Length: 496
Image (cartoon, rainbow, N blue to C red):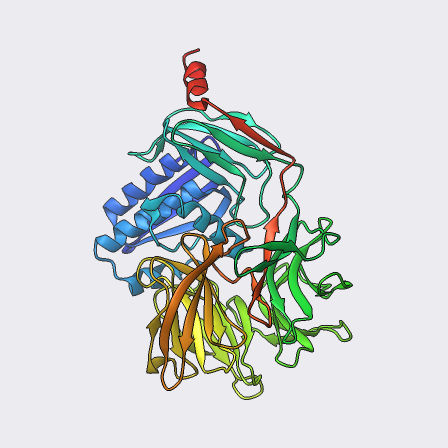
């Protein structure tokens, strides 16, 4: 169709399909032409395949274009199963899928027109963090830590001018394409700069929100997916230190020694203790291929052994208290948009669906007695917490949250279920299972927005006494810059 400014687009009809092929960069500047191309393709056929194998760079503005056309196809009557079947015919490697979808979720949280749609990119997306300013501009941070601003028409979703550089050396988050950037409706701009992502630390937080550092002498570039051993004395956590890859570390709490448990794999994360407290099961992403589950002795005394391999990527491992069941979930970009599965190691030859629908299910969490499964689903259009019996998950279902909820975890005694509300609070819900399942009082414990959070899995752990929570807190930036009357500054520059 056309090729200019580093982007080549073509639309070719193959039978009843329109195959749209893209080569080059899909970014905030070129996404308008990408949108026009998809409009022309949709005018010819409602069955469209995107070939993104030649896309070297894709930011979230291009993802928004894809989602927008996806929604229009749905409104025009193309059934879900048909769309899935057609899109599944085009398959390319999706390295770092979790990071890409975290980036999209961070973007969608501030762009309501995306609602709760899922996306299925077929290429690598680099980090980009964006904010719309009411002055009619879009602020965004590129992967090379440059803060940019570009005129933007929110009604047409189009860039209306050339981007310019505001600042360099922005501090970026390691996951989710995040950056410390905010702009108020009245024109105050705030952003943080720093040499790296900023150090993170582990903190104990009491039920009233009082935080205390665990070990100030254990700085980390990134911490995620903390898991406490059954006796609460040891921590397994995904950690980046000294610019090394993401690995599983085992640490004696609070200020005891630590070891790097994993020595292979491109990224290792999502640790879960076995019920006897001797080993840890985790997800491992090799340089190529699927993300598998591995189990390794917590003392590092023996090599890791593969726990489960599938063609699809596997995350959120969790063991039943008796060690008979292993709970997992698939990636959100797989068929069904993320499902919860279970397998009995040594008995079953393959995992079986536990909660598997056309919606997205994440964050499975088994109760301490192994009889109840909590999880997150977006079946209502927003992420909410639900509980079902286990393993007979079809015997009942209870909604736990209202108004949004993620990251469910059970209390050690099983009488409460904790989760993060959409407001950012950590919430405790009383649970009664005798003689039947019922909900008691729900109470917000403390504001938790200042601690690390992730839609796909809990970023905190519950202490054995149920009185404290192990959470992750980001360090302070090198510089925090506040620009007042920034809208006036923009207007002055545009008049020159």
